[in-house]
Amino acid sequence: MVTELHQEQKANGAGRETVFVDEFVDGVLDPNKPMLGPVRDGGHIITNTAPGCWGPMITPAIRGGHEVTRPVAVAGAEVGDAIAIRIKSITVTSLATSSGNDQWMQGRFLGDPYIAGRCPDCGTMYPETVLKGIGPTAVRCAKCGADATPFTFTNGYTIFFDDNRSVGVTLGQEAAEEIASSAKRYAALPEKSIQNSILTFAPHDLVGLVARLRPFMGQLGTTPAIPIPDSHNAGDFGSFLVGAPHEYAITAEQLQQHRTDGHLDIDAVRAGAIIVCPVKTPGGGVYLGDMHALQGDGEIAGHTCDVSGSVTLQVHVLKGLNIDGPILFPLVEDLPFLARPLSAEEKARAQAVAQAWGVSHLEESAPISVIGSGPDLNAATDNGLERAAVLLDMTVPEVKNRATITGAIEIGRHPGVVQVTFRAPLDRLERKGLLPFVRDQYGVG
Image (cartoon, rainbow, N blue to C red; front, side, top):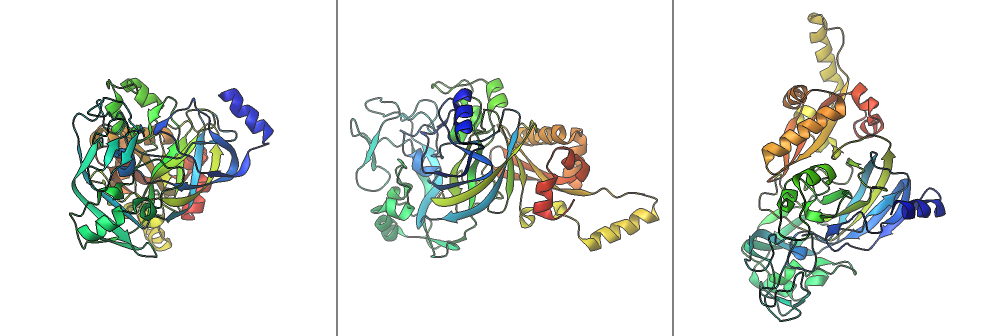
């Protein structure tokens, strides 16, 4: 694959200015499979994404729990580098979606319902399915006709958006069933998506609830160094792969070494943010999906409003950064209060205190958010603290102090994705080649 990638880069010079993506993987991020591109360093990726969780979850032919885009190689990106991704725009195209809390349907999967769907009657693994009618029993095995969905709702809702995609309202049974009858249209599924739309189930336990939209990407990152199902490319869901009975089983050591934490579910990964991702396979392999129309921190229901949408990204290669997981530079308004850049008035007040007590120099600093993941929130926090300490050449206790007095630990996804956010010294950020992004994002440095 390395040779093929280098040959294509040579044929296309330094890579293409823009790569348009309309293909999806079968749920597994596999570095051994061909990537699109390459896109040039500084070039753009434009795509129309398919909904994430629920549609793929009721489509057992998709082997990863999500339906993400085919990865795009970035010219010049080598193992040990990083790729900075500027999220230029995110636009919701779905008219409606359904979501809610899930329950696993026993007998319809092998070890993990997100990955290894199995027909309960004929035993076919990853069965192709057809839809018969609407409702939670509509997904049928194409081979034998059995009800084959690995998931159903414990409490679910159908939500319809206004024309500006600014608010949504949860609907009653009659409206939900009308939408279910034209589910693909209301979901605005991309042409090459193979998922069964979750709108088909017509859930309606919540009615008349109003929610604000603020879209972001639940999946955005780089391809892991070994085949990993897309929804499990993080330390929490990835832990389900350790010793699993299906063909995607890996060891704990492999998960720790090769995952890239592209499945974040962090609501700050939205238009205007910059995310820096590790390169663990040649070309990096930038992929995305699982757009959420909205989400509260923690995604405590397990799922939120998955939608189709259009996305534009710009990519930059950072040579030799050698990070283990993602770094995020959120919008100022998404930063914890303590982590926001100091105002001129605050700096002046601080300088007065410093002079009164003989402190000759005030540290110049800027916000950074280091992502950590693990089987639970404690493990994820430890992972994020350790990554931040290695990145900035600090001790973990120093990072803990900085996150306490100039930042916060924020929950991206329960059970185990967090942001370790704090203000870091500018000289450390400059040493790592991150200062240009800090300047663009926060106007400091």
